Amino acid sequence: MKFGILLSLGLLLAAEAPAATIVSRDGTLGLAVGTRLAVASWTQSDTFTNVNISAIYSSQQSTPGAGTFYLTDDIGPGTTAAANEVASVQLLNVPTGAALQTVFSGLTLGPGTYYLSLARDLPGVPVTWYSVSSPVVTTANGVNLESDQISASLDPTYSPASATSVFAANLAFIVTGDVVVAPEPGTLGLLALAGVSLLLKRRG
Image (cartoon, rainbow, N blue to C red; front, side):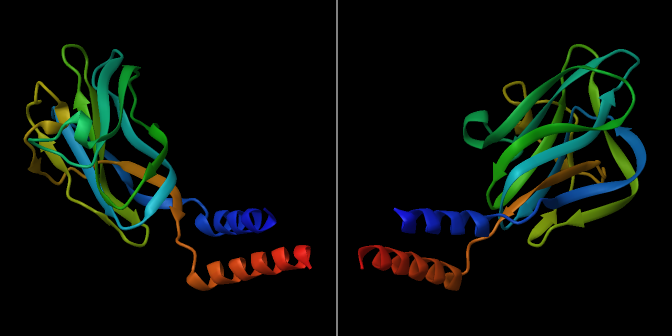
């Protein structure tokens, strides 16, 4: 039993590195991206836990607006909620004034490509995502920021399934989290030996 506890504790201690920026695009606040669907995406080769995603957005008019953020592992025709959605959240009564706000928190994301999209809910006042000028891009090891995409019309069945085109929008967003690192084989071996030694001493 002590061997199991020792091994489990060792794995937990070796599994997560301190929280870090996975990918971000910051800079001088630019224009509101006036489109029905705006998409920022990145590709990561590692697994991250405790992932938080934020973006700069606000109501597009002088009254509170609405919209929906989606996080999917695909975008464009053929994308479905059942097969591709990681998370989604509807934004209601979003105030005016562009600000960095949390969109998703506490996610676990494995290796792959992820698409963060904002759909303007209609009818009503839409929420808009802001761009940055002279963007400063930060990425963790093994993470690549992909090209932004936009769509001028929304797919009526599922917004991320809208036909998109590549666009240099420079959407402002930040993704942070804890990288999950596979323990080194030597570390596992030492933990196993320590556990066996402890077990033999108890029996001796």
